[in-house]
Each structure stands twice: as structure tokens, then as C-alpha cells.
Length: 355
Image 1 (cartoon, rainbow, N blue to C red):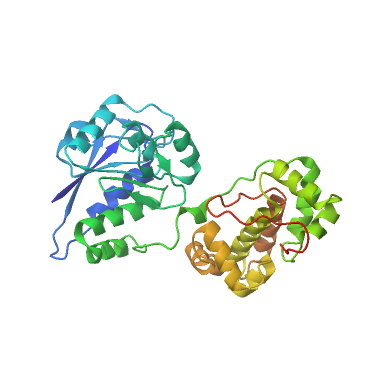
Image 2: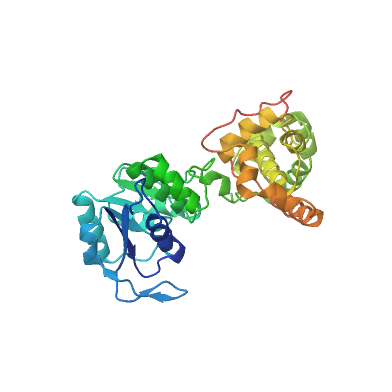
């Protein structure tokens, strides 16, 4: 039987703690045996989670016999990790145990040094902090989980389920993992990665370009060229290109592509329009072009994105909610949307190139 130890420390996120306990304890092998034993090992006699206190039935000493050690997320990633927790995790790794972190549990794992030189992920909202605090780690905020063999990390919240199912598949094969996924009422593999859930914060821009950004956000459905945009801004094309990059932090073409993808996301979330109709209203002209740009920025297809959010059925018959969300997204669109740093787009030259 494969022994799984889940460590409970002060500030642990209850959802992340419960995820491996629930999933591994419900796995049934093809011969109807229980392939996993799960134990919660407390870093203290009473562990404070914020919402409640818990008493773990096992201590850190009981990690010694575990085949897999899981580090759940913590509410405050900057909180110092107890030395006895670090020692227990390092000892487990040295004897060959598999070490996995969920969400911000990556910060606990990073503190052990076991992630140095490896690729890892965490909750997208904490990815930048993890990279800054641990520069020896290559942080990928776009994926649901990263498997380095002995050491694994997952993105936030529900991505812990994806990671646990992945480990079940590694241990007992796809048939057992598929049955575990059915019991968890989730797909064995989800389309796309964490990128589709990231809320991109727009870079600050100088107030002098706010009217132009406002105009552009009203004209995303149109093909506009640099000459038209420059005339509206009352600048020469080269001057506009230089000012746009300085004040917004990206090129005009990159801004427009990202803004159009964000508009497409909103339409997919709040309307029942077909992908072709969304493409036209978002300014891509065709579903093919929308799929290409959407995949590069969001990491999945428009159809899979809509299905993942259950958005189509949610929006039907609720035009007032759709209108409010369109208005709110429009206000946000006059700021610069985050560019796709992984897929640089060509610069928009002055003159006859349509955006």
C-alpha cells in the first residue's frame, strides 16, 4: 500500500489540505483494494487554519514511512517555515519519497531547496512572488502542474486535484485514475492550463494616452491602421509608436491583440454567440484567427474556455448581467491589457498595416 503523508502547519489552507486526503482515500484499484493510506501529520499539536483549529492524528515523525509527502498551500507565503518541517521534508526526499506541493505549498517546498534548478508552478497570483523570493526556480504561472519526477508542484486550488489525479495515473495507470476522476466529478485531464484563469493587471499608462485607449477600446471590432490611430492621437506614426511603448509598456499591435482576446473572453463568458460571431465582434475577422491568438494568450481554445467556465448556459436569459459585465470590462479595457510575453507579436509599422 502506498502511504501518503499530508503535512498540516499553521496557516494551512483547508481546501488544499483536504484535497489529497479526499482524493487518495477514495481511490480503488482494479482488484477493489484500497491502494493508498493517507495520514495527516501536524507540525504542532493544534494547527491553526484561520477558520478553525485542527488536531492532526499524526506528528511529523510519522512522515518517515511515507511514499508521498504533500505540502498544502499556506495563507501567508511569506510566513517562515518551521525548521522541523523543512527537516522532515528533506529527510523524506533523501530516502526517495515523492514530494508534491499544492498551490502556495510551493513556498514551503522552495524553502527546502528541493526546487532549486527546477521548473515549478504555484497559484498564478503568487507566481511573481515565488520567482522573486527564489530566483533559482523557473516559475511557470501558466500550467496546472509540473512533474519533475520526484518533485511535483501544482497551481492553485482545484489544480491540486489535477496533480493528485496525475500521481494516481503514474502509480496505478489511467483506468484507476479515470475512476478516481469520476468520483471527484471532474475530468481526468482539463483543457488548457492556469493561464485561462489569470486576471491580468494592466500596466499603468500616462494620462495623455487615456483618450486614445478609450477610443481604441470602442473600436476593437474594426480594422484600424497606424495612420488612422496616429491621426486620432494627433501625432506622427513614429512619435505615437515611441510614446505608446514608453507609456503603456508594449506596442500598439500587442495592446490591440491582447485587448481583443480579452473582449472575446468576455463575450464567451456572457453571451451565447457562436465562436465565429465572437471573432467578428472582437475584431479578429474569422474564427481561425481568433483561435490562433486566443490559444497563444489563454492557452486553450475559445470553445474549451467557454465549456470550462460553464458560461454559455449561465448567460442565457440574463441580458442585464451581460450588459453590466460588458460595461465593467470596457472600463478596464481603456487600460493596457497584459501582453503575451511568451509569444511576441510583430511590430506594427507606420502606414498600411491593419491592426
